[in-house]
Length: 234
Ligand SMILES: Nc1nc2c(ncn2[C@@H]2O[C@H](COP(=O)(O)OP(=O)(O)OP(=O)(O)O)[C@@H](O)[C@H]2O)c(=O)[nH]1
Ligand SMILES: [Mg+2]
Image (cartoon, rainbow, N blue to C red; front, top):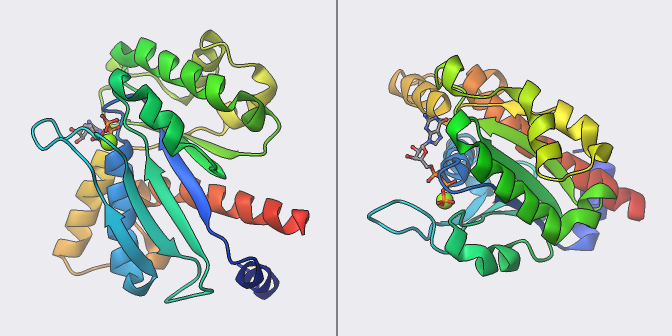
């Protein structure tokens, strides 16, 4: 972030809210846990809190997960961003609506497993029912991640299929460019790469392992898009 941007945000004194959205078991909690672990490793002072609300037996989120980080390094600008996950199970529809309230950005998590096509579709339809206009007019910034790319190719979809999924979910192709820039990720591979590098005592934030970088990138992109848009608003 430039100095000018930092100043504006020091003055603004308000936080950014970004929400992970997607069907149950897509990997939202895993992705946020990974992001938190990386920040804690690289810049522990920028990590404020991390709260997970899950059912111990099934490990599914029963409220939401929430983590807060400072922007910039160390205590940085004093400006914070908050990452939330929604609970993906059908029974938590009303909770999801509450969690997305007032958000600035969205990380849409799609489960690449082919068998989850309908769940992905329903999850997208619901999202656009709640936020439609704000997404179409780009008031809410969005990145799409397609998770579990470690699955065998014959049992999963790829980024090339995301446009069709969106259209089937009733989403207009006004957001064509967003579908086209879907990030293919594997939280599982990222976790393995983390464990491997940390086991060896090797870690360089400027040269993170590829699977880790792929998870960080869309989150950073959404944060940047929000900052740019807030700056333009003055
Ligand atoms: N194969 C594979 N499994 C994954 C990957 N990411 C997450 N998982 C697994 O998927 C399951 C669900 O992950 P969660 O992160 O809890 O899913 P969630 O989206 O938070 O689910 P809800 O809280 O119910 O909405 C866990 O068993 C994870 O280990 C991945 O990249 N590949
Ligand atoms: Mg969860």
